[in-house]
Length: 298
Image (tube, rainbow, N blue to C red; front, top):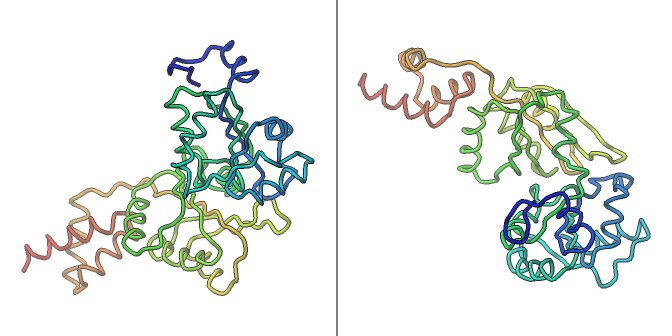
């Protein structure tokens, strides 16, 4: 944590910040089961001067379930007004108020509003603290059955074709486990796209985490895409995808494979698709190299 002039806070400073000075407190709230709201989070929300939230109706319901007063303390903060609200929040914190920040579910700032506000308060020398708790990313990763030592959170899968291709090119070289979000309306199409590029990679789909109909499906991307093609999915989905394997492809070996496929009559596009999928390489890089090699033989 930083002090008023950006200096590191000592233990006494932290106690003072919690006991009286203004601060922004990032509070994790349940991702489904309301029983996951911690006693400390409840106390923080009850004592805060202001509670910033994505949807005031949603947060009012959460507070009401614990008998916590909401009237006059809820202020909407979402992706459309986060920038414009930052100055006001900074002023509140520097003026001595305790401002709690929540999202509709989980930890604020993780694919939800909040990160820009935290940066603004910290840059202004305000105290930023946290009441940690539920996170869909960590929850899904912990039950995925995939490697949890090193992972990357990649937000929502892109909707546009060009952005999708770029993301898949990144994942072709990503050795860490990949976690991303997807909506129930798009998950079948997304897994179809992912499976076409990485058909043998393992994945886990976690749906409705901590809720009554919690479900986790595990298998290769091809297997999961096949199941989803004939299934109606309900509830937000967290996808955990296996990273690229440790194989290293030597340039000379790759060139030989490209030349062999070109000589067999395959097009540059087919060569790029086949090798990027089988070897976990960037589609664009293989396509470019195949074009160069074809031009040298014509």
